[in-house]
Image 1 (tube, rainbow, N blue to C red):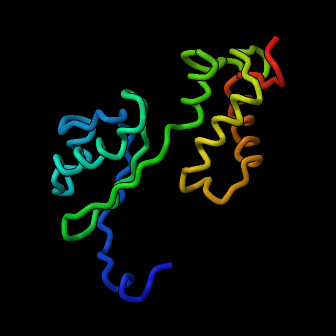
Image 2 (cartoon, rainbow, N blue to C red):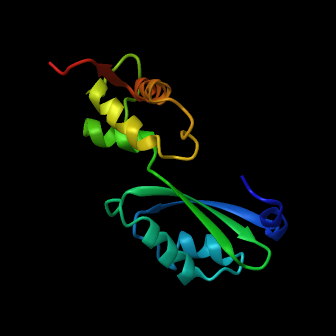
Image 3 (tube, rainbow, N blue to C red):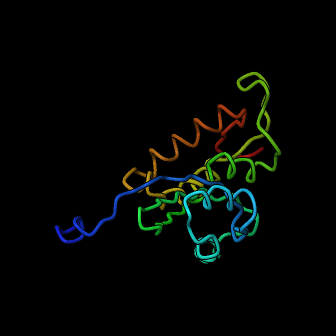
Length: 155
């Protein structure tokens, strides 16, 4: 919990920028440069900070980043793990989901795959206080909407 001194030291937020950038692939060019540069931030400092925070991910993994821009041209970067759909597509080995989910099955996954994805997503700020079961149910719902069938064991 923040103390009163910390609250008073906070600077007003000018903007919040959301980006999806490949892990370790932040460069001053598009899409990072124009999005960050319009707020007169140091683009190279952002790129170095982002690339340092995403070293643990494989290259070309799409990472969701949120940048809070303050009035004194400083920024705060928060990095989240890749989306559930990206994990599901990688686990199923498919390019995209079914065009007709519920009618056509694009692929099958086991509950073990779902559990492993849920363990990774549990570290995200939005899922931090959710149980592993609740996260797994949400992932199963996403898989169903993509046309991926979840089974106990593969045949």
